[in-house]
Image (tube, rainbow, N blue to C red; front, top):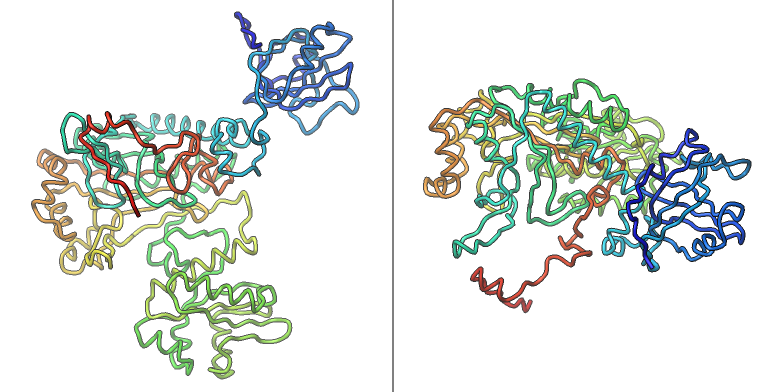
Length: 598
């Protein structure tokens, strides 16, 4: 039967008992992690958030009743132990445990809570993920997961302190707002009071934080919960957290970027004892795409994309000629010492890999130990092969992988994905290395084939480069944005922009996006009205807290840094959400659910 504490107090946590406690009587509490019964001796490992300590029930100290009570204990029982700390001796010392030099000799025991046999071994991160998510409260007992959540808490504390020290004020913005459909799908919340109307959960606090600048708050931040109803990926969740900030009286990207660099440097130093450079690399979007095929490139390894257009402009290889004649390009990456690492079967798999990115295939040219292997050797002469080798600075043992396509962006994106794929396959990234950069000068607009119009690459409140304002309506593809993304190890950690603060520029932006006056008034009326009353130049940024914790804790799974995450289909295995609700609740909201027969 479970016992009561009756005022008993824990005096120290399990993982914090040091040799300074030897000879002292202490009270510890936690979960039974391991158990060994040697007859006259019973050894327990008692676990709490801080770590594990060994508890000994010794016949020389314990009464028969206490020993019998200890013999009933099973794994994951919650117990309280009062005892004296003594030094371990000889083979009993465990150098792999933080508390491996001491043990607690039990004098009193309370069984606070019994436990059934768990559906998986607590601490086993190899157990089925769905099962661990169903019993998430058991999985949270795993040391690695607890340390991730503690690191997350520390990052939030550092952030609050840093931004407060830099004049920012923490302000909460509403969870229930107006739907402004321009981007991902909103999560909608029906209103009971206003029949037929809906709130939207925030995809970000974007409009509110800009209104706070108009309201004169000068510097705002928030560790904000955000929601997007979109398909999930390995590093995405339907609800996520971002470190959100905005500052007034700035009109240069550099001011926000420098402040963010200071925050990230402080976080990495205090969480991982890693010194990031004071100033990150700055790289224009076009350069990123040309060199790495990505707007979030991983700079921890080379293998940059190289342009072969001039080298093969007179090639007899029809694939090269077709690409160039269509206004496209021929590009390549070189895997150093990779010619003999990639078999023909593996090369064929790489062909299929790049096809998923919209290109027709992949050509290769390798300088292996057994000679040249080239997929297009019959279509070109030795002189052209030599020119390609020279242009790519290839050495013995290297292999070049080439893509030719009529669309520049499709070509570089495919090679960028292949570059990262090969880096993962051959372990080119060293754990513990951190490569940071800012991607700047993004296009303000991108053309949507689905909507047959230009859409905002970031959002419709991003300020154009001053020198490009003249092209907003006449040549939108030419307009660059005062936008910036911070990238670490190939993951976008966050991004932001200088905001439009002039009502005429904002009107031009909406016009370039094809919005009518009625649409502007309906979707953003409250926002654009605020521009009439004096708006300071302002800009800001949002860092993805979940992704930041992932990088700092060396995990590639976002579920490892969130206490109660969702599955790939946005469901919760533990609570079984989303779930049906009572008919009365639906009637109160005047909602009728149609049966899905599909």
